[in-house]
Length: 330
Ligand code: HSE
Image (tube, rainbow, N blue to C red; front, side):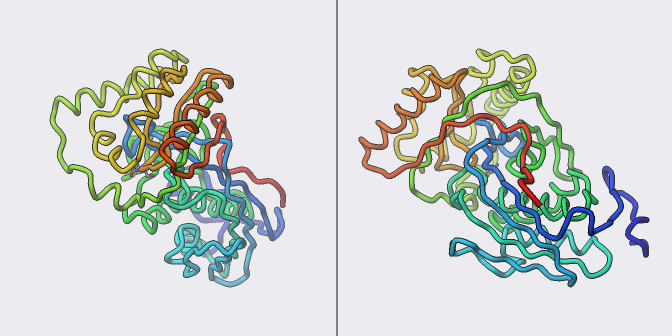
């Protein structure tokens, strides 16, 4: 570490100078939900949504500490090292010279354990907001690196398939996390319908139950699907996207945790969805549709199924968010 902040060399990407007064002392951000895996791309593909969002306020402090406030009384851990927004900021201030810290107030709208990137939203919102106050000192890639410490707190392992789309927006491919290699993929203008059955699936549990080895024939099918899905996004080929949304490795194991999963998938496709599956580690299920009318028809199918099962749920009809975490004022 060099003595003057302006002289700090970038390890990766650009690092700007640090005129702290430029952007004020407080920033508000909207931190969006994300769909990790995109069915076949376990831990390597993710997509950012317009709804729902956490609202976060990040305030600059002139001492090297992190303060976490849960605005709506949600029982979040307030010890920064145990908090998904706090742990990334602890890493960040350790790479900053001088006495800089942050107070983070979280209005949690994305329920933890929902499978739509609740922990990633807190982590990404915190680092993007803090970086805004520091005149974009760190690169996006640095922010992903910090934010992954939040995922480690939440699920015991670092993964970037929620964090990267939350910070970059759109659809991202994570070729590697050691070293970080993030490839933004052009995202078609698709509608996304989400149903969140009101049960909690902890990501750590949903990872624990997975088989540690896969058959070569399954691996071949899976990487064929991943490559074809990426090609489908790039070519805006909706039929290719639809038939590549197939997971022969993770879904057969995890879907047992989600009541009504097979019926939702089948009937949503009959209603016109291109395809879909488990969002992240579940229990939310997502479906992609080519237009809003279809996405609403798909939502109605989901509602009917969970009304029939007698399980509470939330649904969202939304679109792909190309921006990621958004600063809404300062
Ligand atoms: N790729 C991760 C998993 C995402 O499926 O465990 C968790 O949100």
